[in-house]
Amino acid sequence: MRGITKAFPGILANDNITLDLRRGEIHALLGENGAGKSTLMSILFGLYQPDSGEILKNGEVVGIHGPNDATRLGIGMVHQHFKLVHNFTVLENIVLGTETVRNGFLRMDEARTRVTELSRQYGLAIDPDAYIYDITVGMQQRVEILKMLYRENEILIFDEPTAVLTPQEIDDRDNALFPEKINGSYAILRRPMQYVGKGYGTDIPGIWISYSDDLTTWSAPKLVAVAKQFDWEGTKIGAAAAPLKTGRGWLLLYHGVDRDSIYRVGAMLLDIQNPEKVIARTKNPIMEPSEYYEKTGLVIPNVVFPTATIINEGEIYIYYGCCDTCIALATAPVEELLNYLL
Image (cartoon, rainbow, N blue to C red; front, side, top):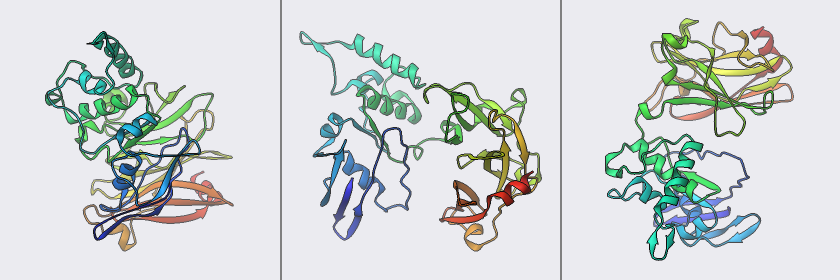
């Protein structure tokens, strides 16, 4: 998307926006309500037409005059408010508009087989014969995702995908993907809520790790670190920014929450070849709310939450969320942090 501008009466929603997407990338658009995130994605999906600018796919300018054009170009979208026919079944909704017809008859058996395979492949369990009005909002979202996969969309757009879900439906949080394979496999840190209990080695949320060969099917999680080791992380811990590879191990900044719901930042060092092994872990937080913008939020006060980290010329740059109001930046010499850890 190059130079996209879109205005509504009295509102400039998008002002000369350029966005590049490459195969395999995941991007998140951040902004306040009304910042123009949904407008930009609606332009990409053909629901709105830009006032100026152009859209290119594989280096060629394309015209997207509606959702059908977007679908033909391999672009799909899951809207915040789902676009499903409530008196149709799950299967009927998934194939709607792309039905297989032979001799004037719908061939639903073939569609059922393919939908079942996609459901199994991507871990999106559904009942193809259930009616939309009978299933939960979380299940409806799975149907929308399967609609995109069924159409073999290459670009998947999610408009506020967790906004309509209950806490129970968002049960695997604080995911942090390692930036490179480990022993030939992808690795991700997780906080799966269903793995909380004495039978899993921790009675409150901790940090777990899973592995995958294809970024689709993940192994059962293994416990890496438990909470409650220190008072400042008494109710839960979780990964945040992706781990950083250093000469001494994987440097992970994580968040801990105490019983007063104060979010602080700790650090741990994981073994390069076996990241299930914790080499070192800070006893005290390395960051905690102190500035006014870290202590005062519109709804949630007292939060510092690392969202991204990079190392540049010996300095670690920590981008972190403050309450629910802003993103801030902190820096420190990386060797100093590693020495403090060890």
